[in-house]
Length: 385
Figure 1 (cartoon, rainbow, N blue to C red):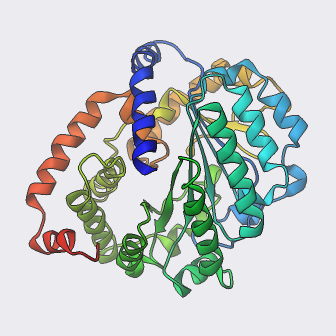
Figure 2 (figure 1 turned 135 degrees about the vertical axis):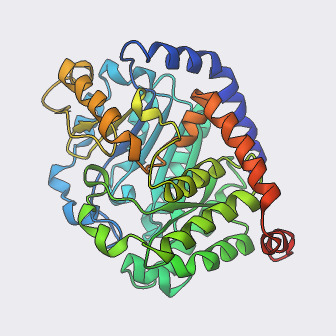
Figure 3 (figure 1 turned 45 degrees about the vertical axis):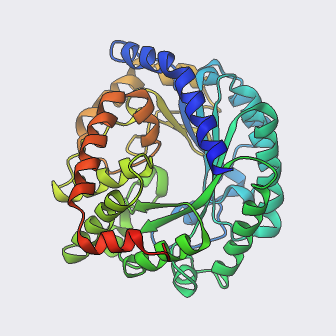
């Protein structure tokens, strides 16, 4: 199933390559409609994570209703969306999640990939929802991708998420998604956010995922008020000094031991570089010219470093997006925030849309593989991995 998914994704990417190149060229001279969307459908969450504060601002009364969602996505701004991701909070806490996703699938005529992030902590709710969404994507020929968040093995995960039996509950969702893959081809795996609390458990998580045969993505903790509401947690969650260097080496080890064409290595190299160079970003980002984010209450913003530029319940999304003041704000983000931005959001998309930076990464990654330490070679050759 994983090979089927990869082949399908590459075929779709190849087919859209001319349009991607044209969009990238045009965006240098004038604003274009977004092709990448992250929609936080709710901030309500079934976890109380140590490194995220979105759950503190969850308010179901402020979430757009299904009818409002349908009205908002009828706006012409969204008609060129190719890649959409639904996040939160926890999306499966919404009773109408399946209907929301159906609206999005039907409203984006160019959609080629659709993803959902989930805690997996309420399997009795989440499994039926994710199953139906995977089926809808399959019926429409749209690539579906979902990941369950795992931030430690066993009790460490429970402590990070502040949920009793959280690891066991998430494991139920994982098992169900793997079973579903036998019937429907889609991309599935787990994701882990590494920060000061669980850094010591990073290798344990990696080895557990390999034993279970699970695709795993590691993310480095970052602090952004518009997207995660966690700016105040930087002092307690950010690895510093020796911990920061250990994190850098962990990401470099992933580049050195994982397959060269593993798309996640592009992000791991980005993390390692930024730690080493004092947080000067070198990687491209689709949100500079082709991305947009939408919050549960209808607030529209360009990226996780952006201010809110308007509310789609009060004004047309297209009018907000193309407003001169909005575009001026986007330019200020490019100048003031982008040079030190750690975000990996949809960075692999930019690899497809901006080929030259990805080629440079491949050259560097190949060099890192030749330099990998003997211990890394032993780990890579070990049957347990």
